[in-house]
Image 1 (tube, rainbow over the protein chains, first blue to last red):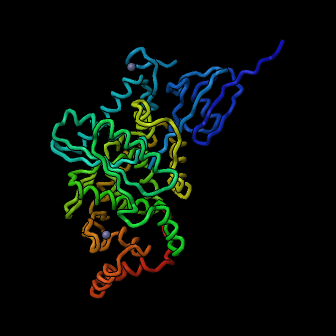
Image 2: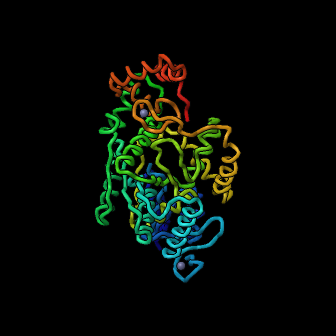
Image 3: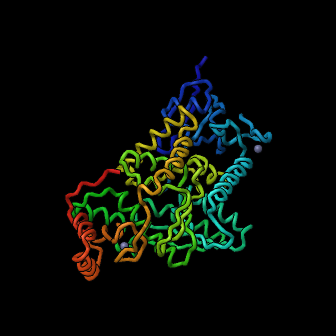
Length: 72
Length: 346
Ligand SMILES: [Zn+2]
Ligand SMILES: [Zn+2]
C-alpha cells in the first residue's frame, strides 16, 4: 500500500511563499499562529471565499493568506 | 463552517471583541452602520458639502470613496471629488492609480490625479535621491507625508472643497498615537481627532470617517465589494519606517488581548481634551511663501522645498528679507538650512 502524504497548502501573498503544513485539520487561528502571522493583519481565503479564524481547514486543501496593510 | 450570528449564511468575519459572526451581507451592513454612526457622532458632514476624498487607490481609500458615494445617493446636496496624489514612486503607485481610475470612470465620479512632479517640482523618487545627495537628514516618509498633505490642500482649494475626507483607520490612528508618545510630541497627539477644523484662513475641514474602524474591517469591506483584488502591493520605502515595527507590536498585542487597540483609541480620546490649551497644534499662520495654513510662518513643505533647491530664488530672497526683522523666522530658517541637524526618527 502506498502512503499518501496529505498536507494543507498555504499561499502567503505578502512574502510570496508557499508553505505546506503537515496536519490533518486545524482552525484558521491555529494555522496563522503556526506561521507566526497575526489574526488582526490577515484575511484568509479558501476556494476564493473569505473564511473566518474559527473555521476549520482540513488536509488536502489550499488556503491563501492576504496581509491587510495600509496602502498609503 | 462558522455561521453568521444573524442568518444561516457562512460567516466572513468574526468580531474579536463581541465574538459576533457576520456573513457578507451582514458584515457590509455592520460596517456601513458603524461609519454612519461615527460621522453622526462627530458631526462630520452637513447637508450641503463638496467632499474631496483623498484616495490612493488602495483598499482603505477605495472603501471610503465607495461608502461616501453610496451615502451621497441619500444626500443629494453632496458633491464628491476623488483626489489621488501621485507621489511618483516607480513600480508602486502606477498600480493603485489604475484601481481608482477604473472605479471612478465606471461610476462617473469626478477625480483628479495630482502629481508631486507638477505640484512640488520633482517625483518622490527624485526628491529622496536629491535629499541624499545634499545630505539632508530626512526619512522618505517625512518628505512624502509633508508634501502629500500640502498638495492635497492645494487641490482641495482649487476644486473649492468644503471638506477633505481621509481614510485613516483606527490602526493608523493608534499607531500614530503610540509613535508620538514615544517621541514626546504631544502637539501631534492633540491633532489626532476625528475632525479637524480651524478658524485660520484657508484651512479646509478634515474628517476621518474610519476613525473607529479597524484596518482589517476596511480591507474586508474593499474585498467583499470587489474594490481591490487580494494582492499584496507595498510602498518600497516602508522598510525605512518606524511605523512598520509599531504596527507589528500593536497587532501582536491585539491578538493576545482583543480590544487593546480600541482601548488605546479611548485613551487618546481621553487625553486630547486634557491637552487642550497646554499644547498648540493649530495652524496660526498662513505660510509666507504658499499661503497655506501652517503652524510656523513658513510651512514645512516650503522649508523642505527650499532645502531641496525647489524654491525659486526670488521667494527665498523674500523670506530672507522678512527674517531680518523677525527673530523667530530667522531661527526657523537657520534650523532648516543647516543640514547637520539630526532628524527625529519618527
Ligand atoms: Zn448574515
Ligand atoms: Zn508654504
